[in-house]
Image 1 (cartoon, rainbow, N blue to C red):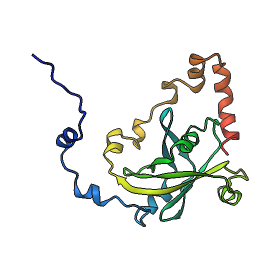
Image 2: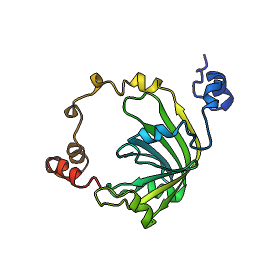
Image 3: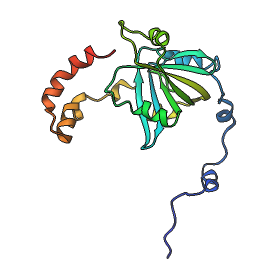
Image 4: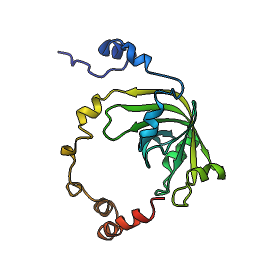
Length: 205
């Protein structure tokens, strides 16, 4: 008996399996930042930034107090690049391929917001000054031209119980940053963990 093929390789197969797209899923997409979507951006303290580079895809977290992403106009978002580890994976990728995708999360809210667009890396001093925190400037600001915006329903968040306090786990149930580094390198993991809280506190911005 021949082995049954289970890997989908054709779009027609995929569409036949999943069926037609519901009208609401089409109607919710806009090519600009519609007024109905502005409150989601303003309320979000966290966004995942997806980029594509010569070595593949990358998704990087970005977080700040709610409203940290500025809506310049209906087609433009401004995202400050805060202090980090200087890997600059996302920025390297943008220089190679300026397409980006954003996924906004809002604590306690099931719906997420998805934005696709194209990014430029801006170093204008006046622009950087707009995003100063504690007199510290971001080194760059991403100027993102929006191509599409739409919300994602709450099913994934509900299934994950992401905002359910009862589902939170103690930090010590997972390896600490120092433990990970010790297992992967010759870095002193205990010293790293001991210094980490103060280092994060002093280098947020």
